[in-house]
Length: 218
Image (cartoon, rainbow, N blue to C red; front, side, top):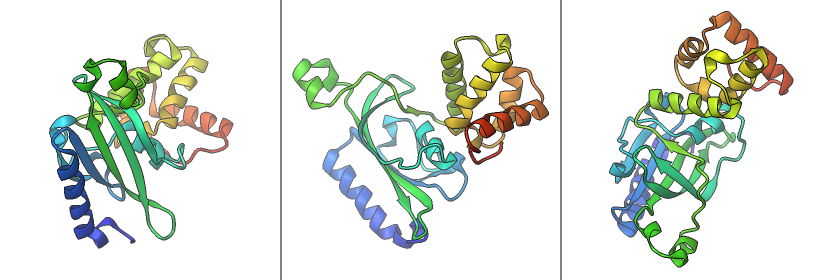
C-alpha cells in the first residue's frame, strides 16, 4: 500500500465495523498524513466526541511522529482528554508504505467519562490513568496554543520573562512536540516570545545541534 486510497474500500468497511461494534460513544478516525496536517482527517465516525469532522486536524501526538521525535507511535489504551472535559481511552496505530514512511493513522477514542463516575472497580476496568498525554483540538491554531501553554508550564515562567537558556528550553519543548510541523507556527511563536525569525532559526539550530540534529525547519 503506497497510499491510503489504495485500500479505500477496506478502510471504509473497517471504520464501519468499529463504529457499529462500539456504538455512539466510540470515535473512529482515519488520518492521511501525506498532505497537510491541518486537514489530515479523511474519515471519522462519531466525531461529536472530540468535535472534529472530515478535513480537521490530528492531535499533538501525531505531530511528534511526523517530526521524527517519536519513532514508533503505536499506542494502546492510553488516557486522553478533550477540550470540553471528556475523558477518553484511546488507541492509535500508524500506517506505513513499503519503504517504512508513515502515510496515515487509525485512531479509536472511547468516551469513558460517564463510566468513571462509578466505583473503583470500573476505574480499574477502564485502565484509567489521570495523566494527560493527548489533546484533541478543533483546529491547528488551538493545537499550537495548547503546545505553547505546555511549553510555558515546562519552563515555569511566562514567555515574556524568559532568559536565553529558558527560551531555548521553551523552543526545545515545542520542537520535540512537533509544533513547527504546523504551517506558519514560527510566526506565532516569534510573536509570543517577542523575537525575530532570525533569532528563532538561530535558537533552533543550537537546540538541534545539541540534540544531534533533529530534522525539520519552521
